[in-house]
Length: 219
Image 1: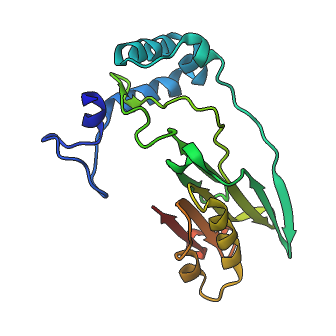
Image 2: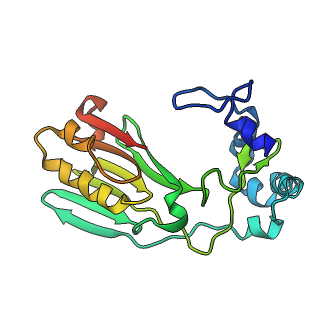
């Protein structure tokens, strides 16, 4: 719809290209409310009513009960010991709705790291926006998105943080792990297969400084 199109277009309605800067004030306000009120307000407070009202105005089907019933699902992880490193994996091969997914990793100078993958179940979700809230609605699907993620630790600090989504996601994580022993660490990491992926690979632990790390992201 027109509101959704405006989110990914310039003022003259030309579509944004890679590297362009976009502004989404409505989304900034929405996230500010979540930050100020806590996530509970988004799922069952006044902000939840705003989301449902925006869905109704846009022609999407969403009810307060749907938001209240949205709870995190904890799943199993698969630990693996290789030499002095411990690798923790979760997820399975991403398929179906997850083909329209992306991934990211975040690290800081203290050695903390997060791997994340997400999807709207289709490119641009339903293609309709929550007017005044700054985000798109996603179609409902039967299959739960179960993205493959991996964190490798040595000496109790992350040395590899990897997230992948879309076709070939598991192969991407395997290739990232194989790059550990490659002589040219940066080159090996930048030739990963798969769909959307983000990898931080460190020759030393993250807390020892970013100069010891390589960052790679794929489309």
